[in-house]
Length: 118
Image (cartoon, rainbow, N blue to C red; front, side, top):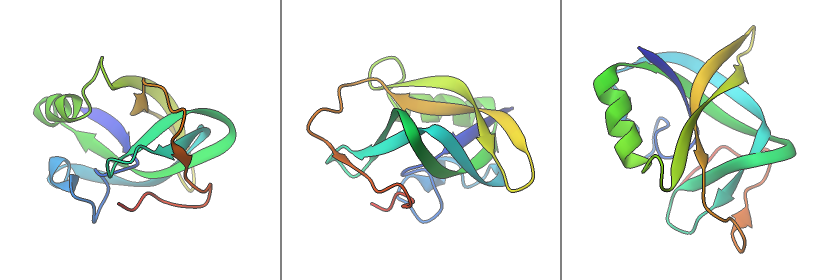
């Protein structure tokens, strides 16, 4: 099993949530040190960024769901899957996270307080 922090189209109410809807929801969390850019393609790009944070949801997924998510995120080409520490309301935990690999020049930065909504 894998614990994965989702912050874009995989979150509840978003178009790719079906990838994780049968997985165990572990709660809302915050990831410090990253920010979101709007790619212009109805999905966000998370990149390392000081004094910023990303709001998202954590799910416990099985091997098959993780493989489907890796394909969706084009791991190795558009995103990489790395381990980060997220903050829940009452604790911290290490989880997996999809970080954007491409250049974000020219993309619009999402507001710090926003959750992603396509």
